[in-house]
Image 1 (tube, rainbow, N blue to C red):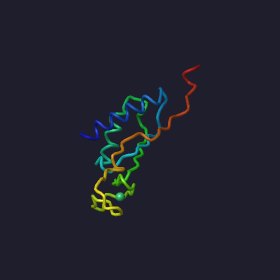
Image 2: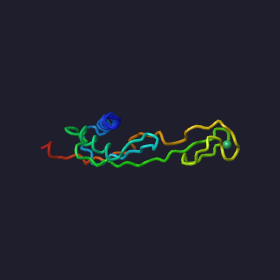
Image 3: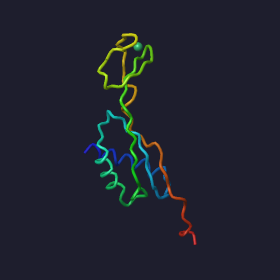
Length: 118
Ligand SMILES: [Zn+2]
């Protein structure tokens, strides 16, 4: 149910930023290390978005590849290369540079409708 709680977090964030406008697209950046299943996330998003301004919005998910980074020399490399020492300087002071992202990158909303203001 990982994706369910993530979906709730997305909808809460987007509803706050939409300020009552209907949302058409939600763009996410999802790090590979989050182990999110895109289809499952989209499914729960539709579910959680019901009866909010996000209802019917399209969820776009950009997957961010996981990378490691050597702190002393700044080199980054994809985590697919199973090196936990820096290939350049040989240092062991290495951390995750990317892959933990889970953020709403942007949202698109409909222009304010005038119908309600007659
Ligand atoms: Zn290094």
